[in-house]
Amino acid sequence: MNRLFGFFRGRLWLWELAALAWLLLLPYIMTAHGHLDWSGHALGRDFVNYWTAGQLVREHQIAPIFDREGFLAAEHRLFDPRLPFHFWSYPPVTLFLVAPLGWLSYVPALLAWSVFGVLALVPAARGFLPLPREAVLLVVCPATAIDLALGQNGAISAALLIGGLSLWPRRPIAAGAVLGLLIFKPQLALMLPVAVLAERRWTTMAGAAAVALGLLALSVPVFGLDAWRGFLTGSLRTQQLMLTQGSGPFQWMMPTLLMSGRLLGLPTTVAMTAQAVGGVAAFWCVWKGWRGGADPEAKAALLMVATFVASPQAFNYDLIPAACAALALWRRDRSAVGQGVALMLWGLPILMIALQALDAVGPRDAGLIKPAMILAPLALAVALWRLYRLCAPSPSAAASASTVGELASNT
Image (cartoon, rainbow, N blue to C red; front, side, top):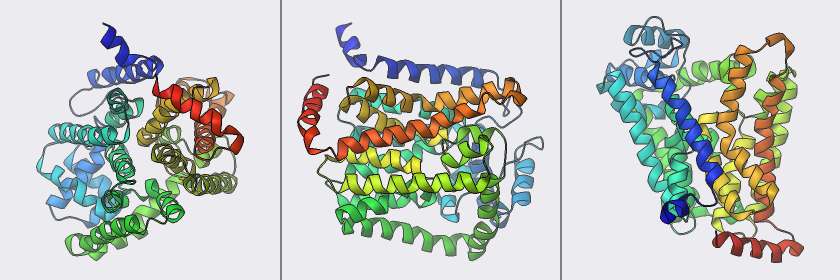
């Protein structure tokens, strides 16, 4: 019993929020009927996009993937004609990742995808976090549960970002190679060039460029140049329209200044300006923080949170790296503010789901729920500042910072 208590000691609130997220996942699975969930969407929601793209690759039908009407028609043909609107938003290099799904039926493919994501996350968490119980905690964090419920790629992209940053201090070329695989989701790599320039990690940059450019070059003969034309003229355009004009439940899944501004009713130009200001602040924090003498874990945590402050396109299922940063902040900043910020960051995916549910059942005309969505980017911004202070402490705070480190090592 003492060993079990020791496993949870000092992090009970984090475990409880993780358990809540997984408990919320159970009703979703249990109320599904066949390959559809209770709301008429595909079981695993967005996974139907990956599965359909894999089927089309197997059929050598690449062009419909990047055509909005053609892709939805393919989903209706291959999956279910009742499926609501979906579209493909990823570059052609992502087809390397989803192509194996073309040889599996839907439910086995969904299970294989989910297991693959969790298994990829395990070594990344173990390599980055110093304590085994923290690695376990990250794998079962609320963002992971949301990612699995939505059939998304958040665990895979998190494994690449966290794994690459864990390799960064001691194996720079390997770190770059792993991070270069994020070419399929470049919005999660926004802060990496800043870190490279701050530390002058030219070998890391070379490793990342070699992998990314290699995948880009290979995608042309494998999937055709028309795939890139379709992506640049079709998928990107649809994605831009959804970000700036689209509406629906997806808005509540985005912890960005841009989408919070839109939910608040601000003009799109004002919301985009707020997002740009947040991006500049994130770049500045990473630049200053990574040029200081902080340890690699603190700097990596800063970069992870800065990524979500800067990116205009991020979702709650992407927030596994932010949960990793929350664990680092929880261990390092033992003040009430630091603990509260870490807890808020950790539970952010659940909060966003709760706000979406309240908006769906509440009085829409009252407008009482939408202003609460500012809590998501606010939590990220405050966490960014707390982590920046850990990475670039003032001379007067150096002694207290070392004391915090000693206390954290004993918890």
